[in-house]
Length: 142
Ligand SMILES: [Zn+2]
Image 1 (cartoon, protein in one colour):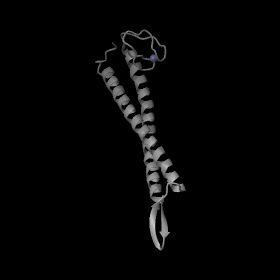
Image 2 (tube, protein in one colour):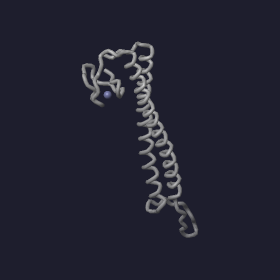
Image 3 (tube, rainbow, N blue to C red):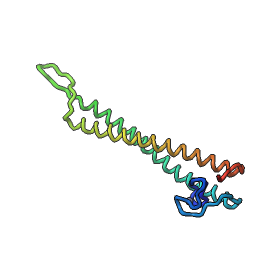
Image 4 (cartoon, rainbow, N blue to C red):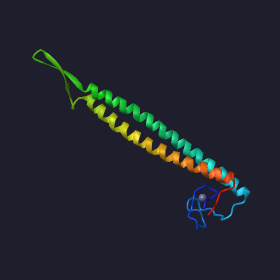
């Protein structure tokens, strides 16, 4: 059962919207259907903003990850022993801490971005199906 005030789905025998407290209607007239379309569009727009936030998270995460990997490379220090110089990895240098911070925060941002983008994508598909069913009158309230 859809609430026409907030366009959220409630249990099929609910009388009042669990999300906004509005009265639920078992049969919707044309004006109520239009209202539901309008409110679903609003939720779609909010979802699109969250989706874009998820994309920003993905891009930032990728940048942090690249910086982290570059600093792993910088954590190798040149060491000269008996006239022979070689690259030795140092886990105590400043560069390695930057690498760790970049890789950890980058990974977190990427995972967060993937979750938000996929969640909002499926939400938008749901909204699109709802609007389509309202437009072509195949919509069923219960
Ligand atoms: Zn509601």
